[in-house]
Length: 228
Image (cartoon, rainbow, N blue to C red; front, side):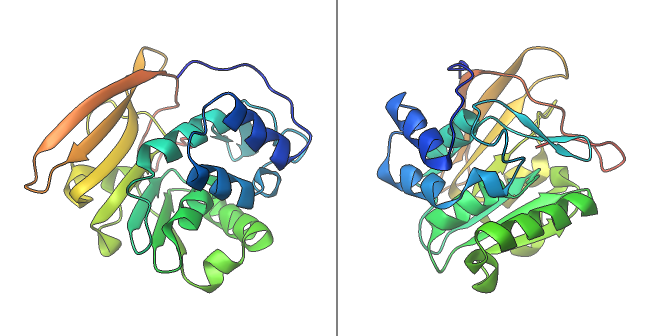
């Protein structure tokens, strides 16, 4: 997805209205989710409403708002009440919270990070901004190697990966439910990368769709840091 420009909003409302006005947000459900999760609670409030990636500490970043909106639009048909989703490289917890909002009271959004500090950061952010998601069990945050997924709560109706994989992570494919959808960037570090949509048919077949050129940090082992 082409970068729309460095929009500077003064509030979460400004940002979400901008994303809808520029047709990145196309559906009411994504609009409502992003409206109910104030980005200022998940990153530096001085820069939270700028449409660009932002550092969140520990060598990590939070993706630009338009990329998060784009991912939610791609996955929205799977983000239904009662569904389960996995957010790999959950970072500050922002996108995990947005997905949980779309899942309804009976859904589960699992965010996985390899750095315990980022898991704690996300917990504090969600507790501050959307504590109901933790209280009713709609969000679970875990520490682990995102490339291996989180089989304890699989299968997942949707999987979002926030860092670029050099090759398709087989564990994530295995944990994707029949009829499920995964969105992930693929490609080498500091080179051409593509956002890819993976659909698993009800009989287990895999279909790939190449969406747009992107730039993400690499999805690596827990011995190396990777931002979301």
